[in-house]
Amino acid sequence: MSLNTTPMANRIHIGFFGRRNAGKSSVVNAVTGQDLAVVSEIRGTTTDPVYKSMELLPMGPVVIIDTPGFDDEGSLGDLRVKKARQVLNKTDVAVLIVDAAEGKHPCDEELIQLFVDKEIPYIVAYNKVDLLGDGERGDKADESSDEQEIYVSALTNENIYELKEMIARSVEMEEERFRIIADLIEPEDFVVLVVPIDSAAPKGRLILPQQQVIRDVLEADATALVVKENGLAETLQNAGKKPTLVVTDSQAFEVVARTVPDDILLTSFSILMARWKGFLDASVDAVCAVDDLKDGDTVLISEGCTHHRQCDDIGTVKIPRWLREYTGKDIRFETSSGTEFPEDVTPYKMVIHCGGCMLNEREVRYRMKCSLDQGVPFTNYGVLIAYLNGILKRCVKVFPYLYEKL
Image 1 (cartoon, one colour):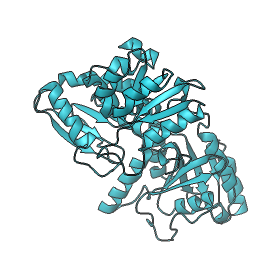
Image 2 (cartoon, helix red, strand yellow; image 1 turned 45 degrees about the vertical axis):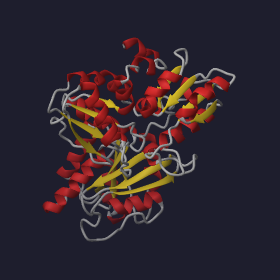
Image 3 (spheres, rainbow, N blue to C red; image 1 turned 60 degrees about the vertical axis):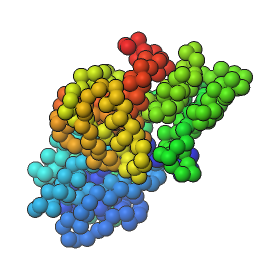
Image 4 (tube, one colour; image 1 turned 180 degrees about the vertical axis):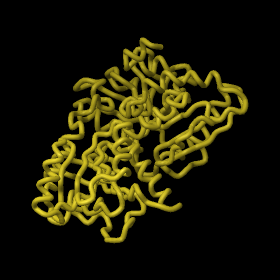
C-alpha cells in the first residue's frame, strides 16, 4: 500500500438505510455515479452490507455502505437486519431512504431513533419523487420543512447533488482533533521509530500504524529514523542529536525502555493509535484491572483486523503469556477479530483491544462504550504492555495531562 493511499479506517463512513424496495441501492448508485449496488424490483436484493471506498466530492475519501432492508423477514432476514444494525456502529453519517409515495413506516421511525440514540448525524431522503404528481409533490415538499429531509429521484437524478451537499454538511469536515504524532513534535525535530522485524512482521512491508506515523512525522516537517531494536543503542550514540521522541512497537518495550535514556520521551505505536482513535484515556484508567484478575477469569482479546496468525502472535500467544506471568493466575482467554465484537461482554473480566488501525474511530469508541456501559474494563495492547513492564507513566509522559493522573 502506498503512503498516500487513504486507508478505509480513515475515511468518512456513509451508511444508507431503509426498508426493502425504498430504493437504497438506486440512490447509492446515483450519489456515487457508479453501479456499485445491484438494483432490482425484487424486494431484498441487497442481502449483505456492500462497502465501497472511493473519492466523493465535496467530502473527499469516503466509504459508501449499502445495507439490507431493515424490514427483512424470516430467519435469514433477521440475520440481514443484524448486519445492518452492526453497520450503525461504524457509520459517521446515515442516510435513511424512504419511498416518497408511501412516507415513513414504523420501521423508518425505529431507524431514526437508533440514529439519535447512537448520536449519528442523519438525513431522510424521500426517493422516487419522479412518480409523484405535481400537486402531490408540492404538498409533500411543503410538509417537509426539516433541514434533515430532502426529496430526490435516483431515476432522474433530481436533487442528488443537493443530497451530497447535505451529507457533507452533516459530517464534521474540520481537521482531526489531533494528528497521530504531528501535534507532539515540531519542524526539524528528530524522531526514532523502533520497528522489530521478526516472524510476525509482514513480508516486504511495514504494518499500517508504522506507515502512518512515518507519514505524519514527514508532514510535520520533522525527521523519522527507522531502526530495529538491536540497532537502537548504536543509532542513539551516533545520531549526533538527541531525538525528541522514540516510538517503538509495544512488543519491544522491555529492551527499548532499557536502551533509551530517561530524559528522552518514549511511547509506542499502539498508544499513539489509541489516542488517535479516542480511547487512550479509558485504556489508561482501566489497565489496573489486571491486578484484580483471579483464577478462572476470562479475558477478551480483540483485534480490528483478520491477519494470519503466526507462531508467536501478539494477541493469541504473547499477551496471554505475559498476563499469566504477571498475575500468576490461571486466566482463560477468548479472541475476536475483524468486524466481529460481542454485544454482550459481561462474561469477561476485561477487554484488551489492539490499536484499532483497521477500524474507524466511531467503531472503536462503540466497542469501548459497549464495554464500559456493561462495567467491563477496556484497555489497549500498548497501554497493557507498558503497565506490565512498569513503564506506563513514562510512556504517557508525552501527554502531560495523562502523566499527571498517574
